[in-house]
Length: 146
Image (cartoon, rainbow, N blue to C red; front, side):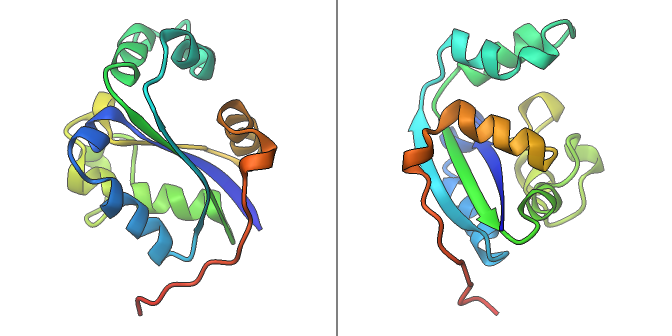
């Protein structure tokens, strides 16, 4: 079983689509292994996105991610990273396939509704950044939706 991290960004939380987003992951037979809603501090956001520190959009990204509450999700299941990235759609909503989260809800690349890990290695690092190992619950997921 593979795990991945998803962050529902402030515009997704404020937009009232937390349930819709989680539902899409659950329908894909991914289980919610850990969940937390919180306001990120500037230091937390800067630490999490440290790999982008030298890029021009870093300050804007940190400002956006600290502009309101986010939902942190550790998801588990077969091919979790790949499934989540497919469900989310392309980073730029203009390039996202119809029916993906970013196509359906994201206004632009900078406010693209969700973050997700891009590899199993990134997922392990990102999950550990937000969640203590003791709070992660593992269980097999299946969907009642056919």
